[in-house]
Length: 86
Image 1 (cartoon, rainbow, N blue to C red):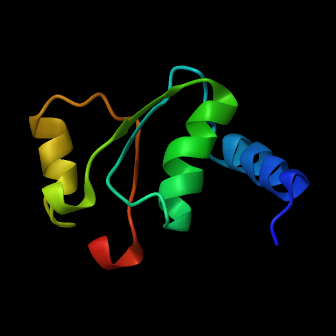
Image 2 (tube, helix red, strand yellow):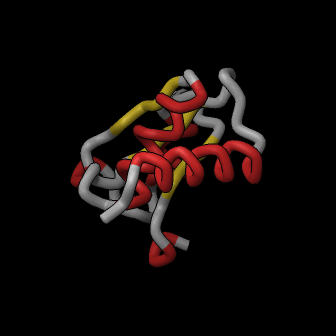
Image 3 (cartoon, rainbow, N blue to C red):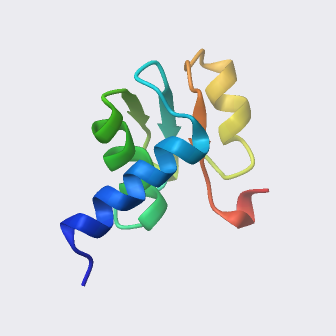
């Protein structure tokens, strides 16, 4: 089980490691049942008070997300994706 304290510690460490600020904008397509989707694209922006743009996972293939985000003019500072997307 993950405790509230564990989540808050994780959020603090991510904010510090990635230097997230209130001006950071997250763009993501990972589903919310995926750890990076929930923690990285929902909880981190909520924790720091920034913006998150969520897209449906089926809308983009893993290879086109960075191109699509820039092409659509999405102001993403951070994009979360799994290792298989590299």
